[in-house]
Image (tube, rainbow, N blue to C red; front, top):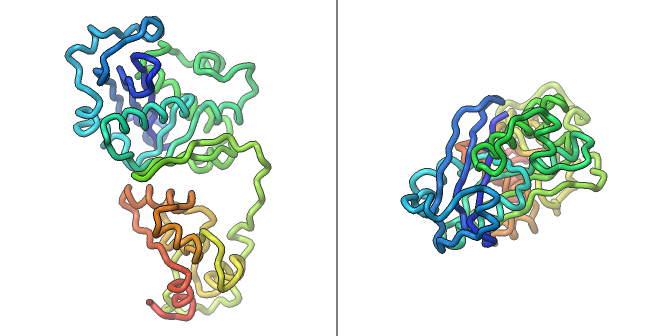
Length: 310
């Protein structure tokens, strides 16, 4: 599992008053890098309540950088294009948005999820705060130290994956039925705990090619396609079947092996206007990580089906 665990501490009730940040990068389920910094808030006021929680004072951050300097020099590269997790991500991602807004900085492109939500879908516990979950799992915790809290959130995710026998992050998200949040340069979408019963979608293995003799010169042959938005020219199932018949593959979800994302006419208009579906947000995250995925408007997809390379 590859992801970055995040935690912020704030100086007062303002979410933009970051006074410390902890980031822990996990690669293949193991800690790879750890990052911790004290941060000098723009309005350097520390409330007694917050000091009592984390112990950081105005004097502690007197020589620290403000967030905008750290963001440009260090933090952005640790987050951009990554999958982030936090325990109570609503708070931490809210802090990130607030402090970026405070300094007029663009949002990074990233996906994220919440280990509170994942814990609720994995274990039956009386409470799901960080201390309760770490106590249940036997994880050591120096609570309200940003690095230690981030590290604990990462270990919770790893243990949830082991408990549910998830092969990777995508599999864990699917098995817990949670919904990833997204951040991008024009806004964000919150991570959610999906309580509704999920509609079962047809699986790729249910589509069988009508022939075993494929035209290897066909532009769909050997390529993988995902779809988003309603198609005007045909039903989604027919489009998938025609891709399979041409020797292509269908991906229900977009991943690093997807070659094309076919976008229905209305969804394509929205995309050009900056309104993106979850799949298109996922695609842009993968693009930011260096993967090659091409967006196809419906008319261009139809040309491919007819054997034109466009």
